Length: 150
Image (cartoon, rainbow, N blue to C red):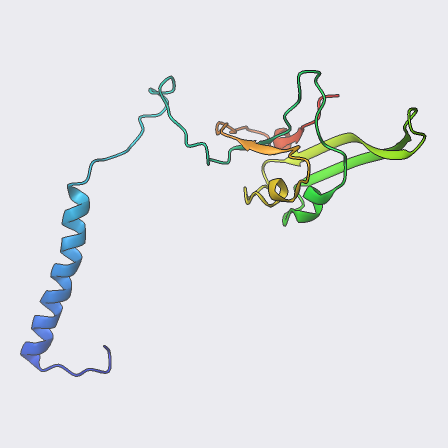
């Protein structure tokens, strides 16, 4: 439209038309209902979407064991290197084969960009994001979390 030349009156009419188009959008948004949450006053009734990505967690079963086999796929998938998986090889007494066991699973919440690539890369559904969003701390070192609790 920049190549099109308008006369003085044509340019004035075109300008008023574009102004009214913008005002139409503004007027429509003025009358839509507001969805502002009054946090923290409504903390008890706050509804958070299940798709919200708050903090990486490692769920455990009823025996307190997690599903992580220390394969390192989540660590390789993370673009910011926020995950550090430390594992060691042990010999299984029942079969006599060597298998990898998780020793430490560190997650840097302060560097995470919540892209969910680590969750998608995990073949055993050992990690997921929860809806916890209150992660404010005064010291960034407190944002480095150890997810396995063994």
